[in-house]
Image 1 (cartoon, rainbow, N blue to C red):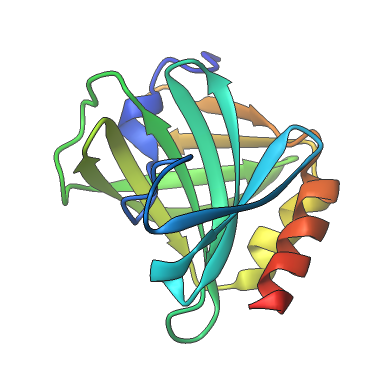
Image 2 (cartoon, rainbow, N blue to C red):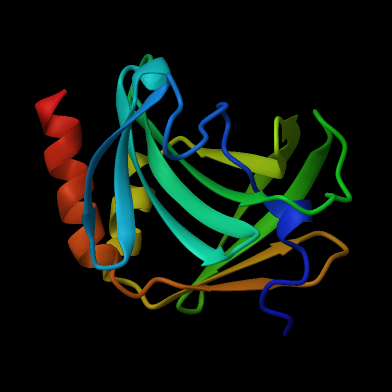
Length: 164
């Protein structure tokens, strides 16, 4: 399996979050290698982000604009082989348990990829106790993500979300 070969083809966040100086986000803290942010455009909702390389980072968070739901995302600065609005079938393997979903391609200033909304918020929170998330878009190479440190990061995410 290729670990980071298709960052641009799978996931990017559903909003125009750029970490650091964005008007939509405010840093809440850091925990176990993850940064925790408040995204005011999502309810406000909180998210965790971790750089995977200088060109890519993974984001998981809560959209609180209506009923709470989660999302999983990857950013890449490289060109993405997915068009904005393009739908991709995706299989998520979480420590051997498989789920299916649909990613939507998105392009934003400086980043490309696609995002996956998750209607069951517990799916996002349950990732905290897992080890590996493998994302396989239909017809493309799998992306393997370590979930190391997510337990501590999600405790901070929950504290962030409860403070909103």
